[in-house]
Length: 238
Image 1 (cartoon, rainbow, N blue to C red):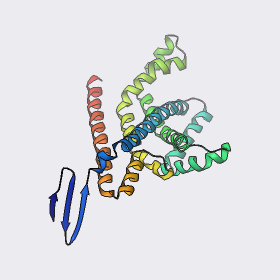
Image 2: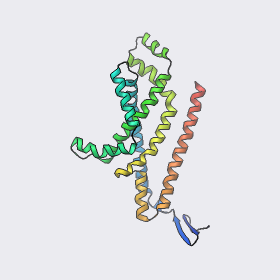
Image 3: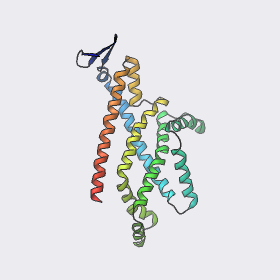
Image 4: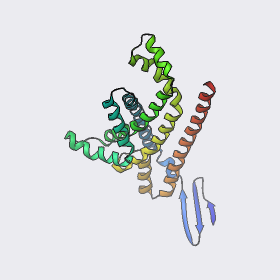
């Protein structure tokens, strides 16, 4: 295989009479479009994380409740969504919600709801495990001090549970960031879709998808290193 470099961002590969050229100048030339896609990806990820954790916390509290109906409902919800592929949930929300509400719903809104509902099932189990990891005496001590059950959960149990489960919550957030690439099926212009638009328009598929893979790898690898560092700090403090 022969490789020649022509210019600062142009590479020519030759092998068995096949010649193809890589021109990475297409990336800075379309930086504004790609940046808009990246912002959409991070916005969707951030809102889905917040919504998923809030709903997941509510489901976790229902799961450990002493009322069987509430506990069974939470268990059914979690098992239902964890048994479905995310792309199917995205399709459901995108095509069925307009039929239910009787008017069109934007791609961003439907996708965001799909991610929140889906991720809440996973966050619920993580948070429930965190609550169960807190010593039972903590709740009894809080109640003995005159706090209600809700106050005990809010001020005593949940802070400890979230602190213990932070690395796992962040790991799930990394997975969510990767899963946002599935929004291409409904045409939402995230980072991957923006890169695909440029790739098809300028006929630079290899360059653009190599760049997309590099961006996802750098972010996820750096985030995973941060999670490992945080896990070590938490373990040392316990």
